[in-house]
Image (cartoon, rainbow, N blue to C red; front, side):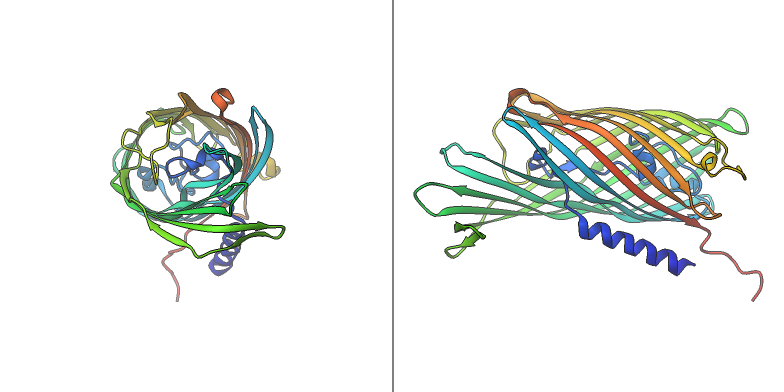
Length: 413
């Protein structure tokens, strides 16, 4: 059974990885790209809340909740995004397919731990324009800053749980600018950035039981990074554009450009909610993020600043009747959420904000605790003010949570 589960998950992951196109937002040209990880598909469907968990599905945003695990869980999720860009000159569309996470979580009594891989930030854009010299140019970018992590959490005293997670962030980002002057060969400048550095997260959760089925939960999560290094190299080529594409017309010139060191934004998240076990949940969170030390991966850009970010999220779910024997739909979990975020990017004096409304369902799988999670988010990013771009997007997400007691002590040989 376990082999079948592993094979199924690997096939799903392979399909998502093959189709992956990173981001499709012009705002990802800045910094290390846009942050695209917002938790499991179940948590994303509740506005990205990090304070809810159950004993069978890991919460990969809040390590203190590993202490609640009762079964070993293998999780995988991916998202397809379709975006319409609106600017003063017209409209265009884009799409992206992203593997959201691959995670394994294991219980050990009052202690639990987990590890996995996820794309933490993404770069993906393609646009054309006229540069300061009056030449037409195209600008494309791609790549991910990935994250491998190991986290652990434990129940300490009554409703108190504490946890920690350590992460290594790595990846390669690429930016290609091609200029098309009228009287000379076209020029292509390719900039590659290799990123590496550690970060960590600490969290605490306190549950206060109101009765046997109802509890009030408070949560705090703090994330911080060590030094993130970006190693940069630049390649300049003279190219000729033909009907079949771009052909290199001369040898490449490799330039070493300055490397950079900075910290990822630190974030403090506070949350609270009410849980009716196996029936419903409602909660909310607010976070504050310090971007003071954050920088662009290659060079500082004119009229681009990084400011403090903040966000508010609310969401919840309902299960009509989790143990219904007559209706499959009553055993399903129905989720809804909303989020508003100032992402900390300021362009030409204008804040870049995000808003999203999400919906989702969990479909029970077989007779165990596994589920197929589906989610949809409608949202927007940015503004058309000051020559910027307004993005209206719809995200379709699918996740698989395979949960079982993998390590059972045999009673008979």
